[in-house]
Image (cartoon, rainbow, N blue to C red; front, side, top):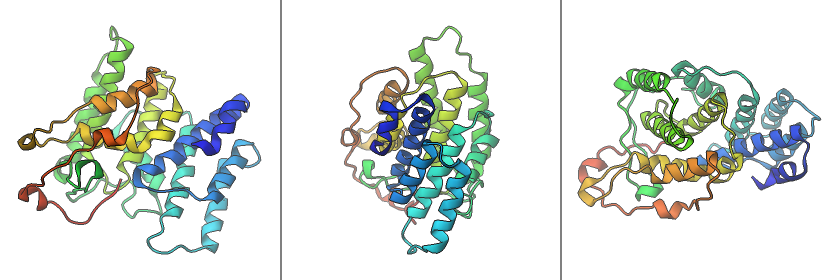
Length: 284
């Protein structure tokens, strides 16, 4: 995010790392169309400068919103609090590759924001997607989420990367993340949770990431996940990893792919049987 560019270009190493983390934390709010407040940005800069700790950032945000109640449909508080929680998690040096870690990340990000924070959903969902002209991806049935999570994690855990090129490794991780996102284990907050889990996982694998790719293209990341998991064979539309691979190529392989959301957009004719799945529009 441009708000923290000065630290990436001129900052000391510690400030540069913090600036990149905050850029990702703020940028990820765009997956749900959220924009953090100017107060959060200024407070984050004080953390980058070393004037206050991440704990103090959280405390100041709590005090700030206690004194300034927002309208019911204003999600600025969510954007601010989730941003600082992402920054906190990405600053840590702890990680366990497991469904429990994935679920814990969701709880840490959304506790006090969503009632279901840290809980696997027990109902089926659909989501109207812009990139699909309002159609929806088919997500995992609530009854199968736990078993599907366990299976996907076990498959990835057992996969051996020895002998694979870096490109092959990156494509495999992209495929795993695509499948993890498609499960949509939570009612809301799936994309941000998946992104944070991915970044932590990549760190444990020793990858150097171009953090600005996440900071500046988080909505593209979400739309690419949608296209990787959407099929409408009747209209000649098939799931594709092309767009997600472009994103991962820029993130991890120093590629310079042009990432444009409009290239992923498809105009769909919504069949009647799909309309039956529409209810409340969920975000995440």
